Length: 97
Image (cartoon, rainbow, N blue to C red; front, side, top):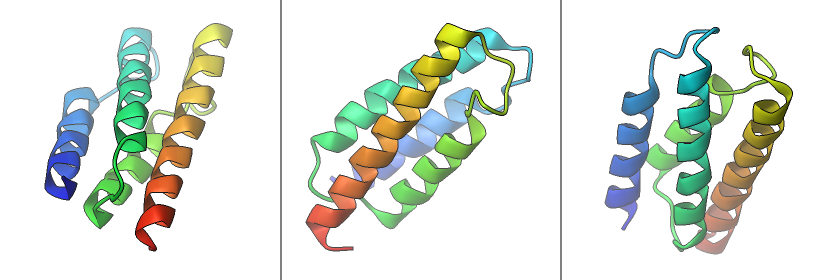
């Protein structure tokens, strides 16, 4: 399961790399993917270190506080990033990392 999640995380990053400051559609897509990925991580009991590294990059890279986003997308993005951080923390905590 760890390898699968690491693979999903890598594909997630690869699919949304290159977001420009003005590319709102890309940020929206990244936010939607982050939301879905957080749900998947919540369902797992262990997270590979590679997945944690990729998740950290996602959280940093697709931060509407640093990009040009509208108010609605900014709130959604913030909630998605918090959800993803919580999912990683809980999975890592369960595993005992």
